[in-house]
Image (cartoon, rainbow, N blue to C red; front, side, top):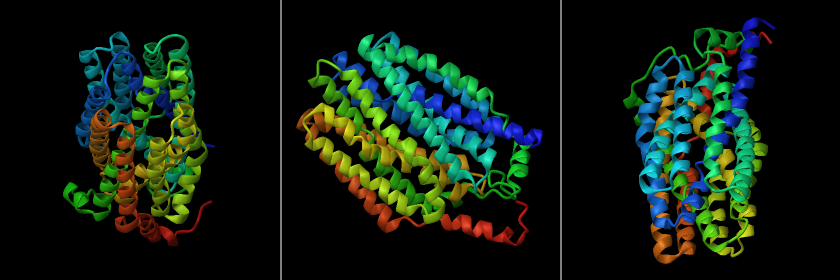
Length: 421
């Protein structure tokens, strides 16, 4: 093994740990916020508005963030800056659960988070290339889900036996190992790309396109437009679901609230850890659409179960369906972005566009679900989320083209070259 190949191997291991610790950090900004604010006498509508500030900020930042990551050679610097900003947001939440600090934390967290997904995707793409990207994304998702489960358990224990505020002190502390893991990844510039080519004995990866198509051409691509609509409906159904359930648990339980919420996070992450590598491999064998249909179909089932159960202790088993959806969606979004834009110089911009539609769906989800829950009850709100999930499945089934064919076409040109493996 050459020095370059050893550097790539070390970088891939560091990328595993980066995904693990970033998931640790982001877990603190999930349903723990809803529980924290509910415990401090915020209504569901007020919580929905506060959470929507973060999703709206991320929504507006997604496209420029993707374009910026495409333009930057140093993806690590962008990732490090985002992680440090998230640490500051956690400290702000811990300092005071009042209106201005919470809104400021949500604002800056939304901006910082939108840099992380394209940065990690760009680093992964540069290290392994297009042909191995499905497997790599599955591995990223596995380590992220293990990290989320670990963090949820730790934060649940901290919240239950210390205070809800302690969750955010722990979140800030976990940014330190995330930055250390990021620093251990070799720069994904020309030297790293060259090493990756040597390791794979393959043509240049699609992360380094020979030509760059216009943004207008990307926006006219039917696959991009339809998948963006599917993403918006997915998040319209999904984003508010666990936050709504967490608020209901906090309002109706006096003991074990933080542990129940932690279990609701841990269960789906266990599913994601088990399922994501299989999703990445299967996407190369079967195509993207069958897996998307499976993942999206879990959404309405989960919403209807949330609407029908009465015991808070049954929430965690229902979250198995969240694990199915999360495993599929987490691998498919950057993989389909690579299919449709990876060879055109707009991979991270495409991820940003998909993130924009996700932000639109998530913003509408938290606002609408909170509004409906305050006026008509949580059951009606969950039913509305189920309807959005059904529409997402129908759109994938009837309108989304298969994008795996793009890879087959691109692979056909060098197919005559003799194998070196």
